[in-house]
Structure formats: C-alpha cells, structure tokens
Image (cartoon, rainbow, N blue to C red; front, side, top):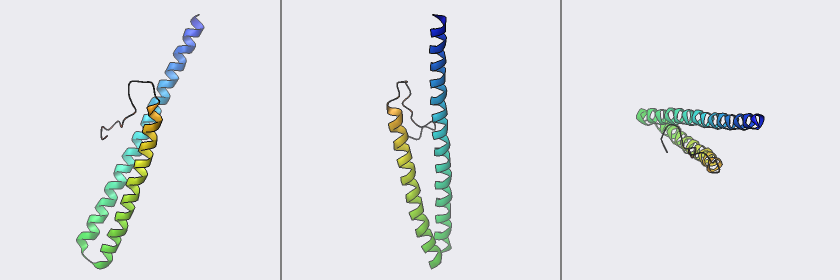
Length: 100
C-alpha cells in the first residue's frame, strides 16, 4: 500500500516539475520576443529619425520584420495556451509576466 502511495506521489511530483519546466520555457521565449521587438523598434526609430531616403526604406523593411516577429510570437503563444487548456491544475498556463 505504501508503495502505491509513493508511486502516486512520485508521479505528481514529476507532473508538477514538467509543468514548471514548460512555463519556464514559455517565459524565456516571451522574454526573447520582447527583447527582439524592442531592438527592431529602436532600429526603426533610428532609421526614421535619420531622415534619408535609404534609411526610410530600411525602416520599412524593419517594420515588416517586426510584424512578422509579432505574428510568430502570437502563433507560439496561441499554441502554448491551447496546450495548457487541457491542464487540470488551477493555473491556466497564462504568461508568468502578467502581460496577457
């Protein structure tokens, strides 16, 4: 009987560990996304402020890159939240940074 209780506890601990690992992985992805988004936005502003025609074209390309970055993260975020929807814990898997 104690062996079954031990195995049950072990399985619960493993499940909680994997859930924490998953949230940590998502948090890292979210931090990297925010850093890339800020970097691209800063580059856009620098090129726009330079005022030369070539810089404006570069800024337009960077704006397209920013839109692509946001779309990629939105896709990853939706996939993560859909995967967590089936989770039976009280936490729905929302972002750890509270930005959602």
